[in-house]
Length: 262
Ligand SMILES: Nc1ncnc2c1ncn2[C@@H]1O[C@H](COP(=O)(O)OP(=O)(O)OP(=O)(O)O)[C@@H](O)[C@H]1O
Image 1 (cartoon, rainbow, N blue to C red):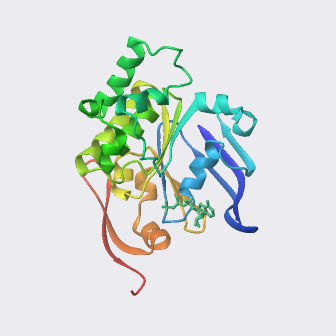
Image 2 (image 1 turned 60 degrees about the horizontal axis):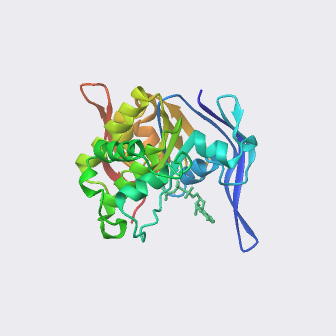
Image 3 (image 1 turned 45 degrees about the horizontal axis):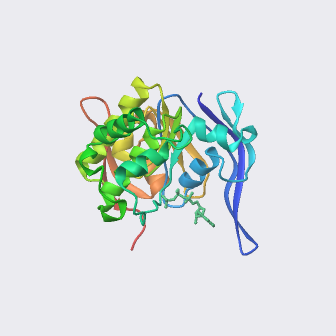
């Protein structure tokens, strides 16, 4: 087990009111490529933020045998990098500067050729090196997303947390990003946890899937073949869907209709 979450309790506080997201949630993630699935509002982003130490929760989150709440901010940032769902997109920095910024803790007073090479290599791996000198606020939504992903990857963390990284990417780039993540998991021995809405992408690439219900409770976890079932799609997402297996035994979901009448 890579991340172990035990008895997690968390509520957002707004105008003195509490909005409970997790009530004694116990769940774990494995080494490798993990995906969190669940409908809107299930708590996927909240779970990623909790792991990254951004929220004050009750319960325990461990990375290996380290209790994350006992780590300093610097220790957490050295260990993991986190791509939030909402990107700051008003920046007038260039793409290259933005990626370099991601490695700020490791950069010295001067940006060296090695730093530039690392940043350019990350841009190349996402096929956006040609955008290096363009300003962030002059890019398309998908291009911006890729820059933030490049920034997240360039930090060389042990654990990467990505919140819906594929939304606003075209089909080819969605697949390329998942393939790149798959490669990084193997070549850099990095672990990743991705919150996703695309169940077919999760089915194809995830080594371990965790499914949350819309009320933030645990529904199931395991390999895609175990987790992605017609029953789960009915009970968790409220849809009637066919699930078949392709030639690699990967489940393929064909949605038919919502169980709600609209
Ligand atoms: N800052 C906040 N203040 C109050 N409530 C919040 C806040 N952020 C999220 N919530 C609530 O907490 C619950 C979980 O939200 P979260 O964003 O973690 O869900 P999610 O699974 O990531 O959803 P989505 O798929 O729509 O991105 C939701 O009911 C949401 O309305």
